[in-house]
Length: 272
Image 1 (cartoon, rainbow, N blue to C red):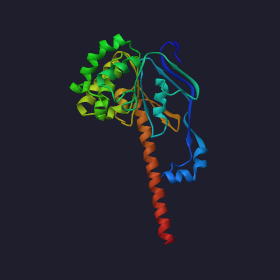
Image 2 (image 1 turned 45 degrees about the vertical axis):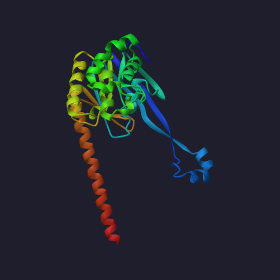
Image 3 (image 1 turned 90 degrees about the horizontal axis):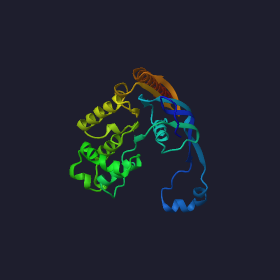
Image 4 (image 1 turned 120 degrees about the horizontal axis):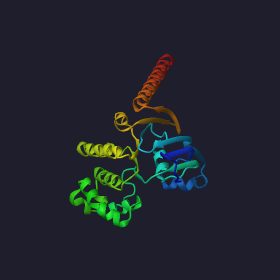
């Protein structure tokens, strides 16, 4: 949903996202599947709540960092923001052209060239065909792919996928840029080039939402941080404070698990 709400770039109002997961374990061979065919046809399913009634507002020009454990709902949040995944319930408001760099290689067709993919993705992100062709030289130059730009993308390494994906994402004049973890891919020199470009976009007022496990990236790129756990926003504040609180909780959890392992070891020693 898009609307005009002053300085709001992104707004979630009680947004939830539910998935349905199968409880049936996958068959290990064809014979097992045939023997238990009725169960495979009508296997039980259970709901998985990726996001649970989330309220969130991101202002125009703001840089928001999202951290949290694996499976907490971080990537789902970005996919809902990008319009890739519709929410199960709630209202999503987006004001501005969104460019998203999510799963590595998403949106690229492996059988066509990097050049053709760049044009196709630029159009999918909102440019006209003429605009996409006009910005193509800048995309090619930024990606530093050389002659590989005219090779099928099935021949690309993960680093090459990232180079082209990032180059397209930042050259379509985004008003909102969504990035999910992919900055960890590629060589150090190109990573720095990307980070410098992100700084330039922020200086021009582009709204940034960054999902990361790199605790150093949050204070560097973001004005505000949130922690997502089990589909809920459980902490919000300055990047430094949110990172500090999260790491403190992780340390407490690790200490508790170590105590439980020691208690289990002692119990086994006594029983033997």
